[in-house]
Length: 150
Image (tube, rainbow, N blue to C red; front, side, top):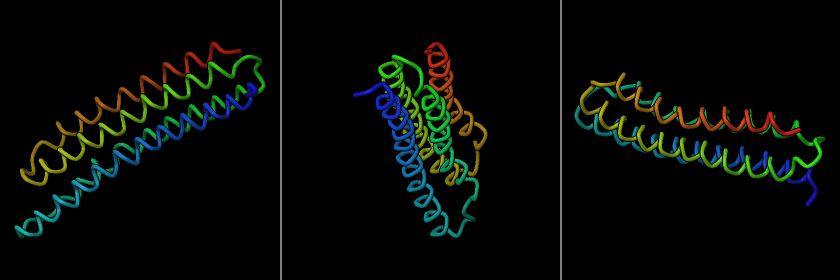
């Protein structure tokens, strides 16, 4: 496989893994939000619109994967960059995607708790922010490593 092909593969892997994590994470949180809203409707309580913030939180990891993808694609002309970009794409994408997946799991719990108690929104959002930080660190450290290539 040529260097250019490995670079493109790494870029696609990074975006794909990050996006898959976002899909899983938003899916988990969305399912929990729907269930929480159903409980509210059944109890004649108002359904909190705030739950959408928990559902949407994992989507940002797809943007981090996209940012890395564009930087990686910029390395196509750099000699011997294929293996480092491919490896960084796989592992950065995996870290970012797993952050999104687990942020969605935490968001699901936040949906249930917020709908049941109508309290703690800021605490739940802070917890999701901590999980998001893993993705930000992975992206930033991958950007630093990619900056050393070429």
